[in-house]
Length: 119
Image 1 (cartoon, rainbow, N blue to C red):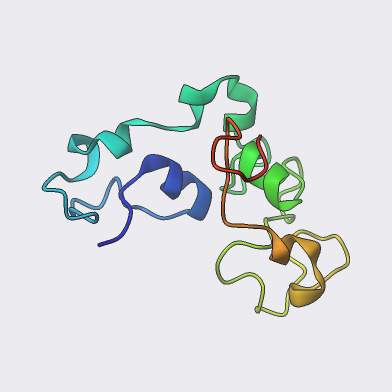
Image 2: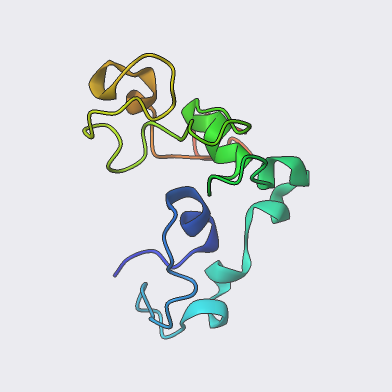
């Protein structure tokens, strides 16, 4: 069982809500699953839900992980696979374990209800 959640897909560039699989084993798949009907725009202003540099990362995710949402080569450092790839993904001069973005919790919280940094 893995999450089937549109916000999960937005944050981790996964495809759980469009793969025709019941990923979370609740008997519902994709848009038939309530979790797939909720996305960033449901939480407020749409500017943070856009991708102005067209790099595939929404502004709120880039802001959270320290990359520049207006610079296509600057992508989040701290998401799975980026903290051991030998690359300065967010272009801040720090690589992998030396990057403060690699110490950020996987938690992205819109309303500060889960104890992680709100957006």
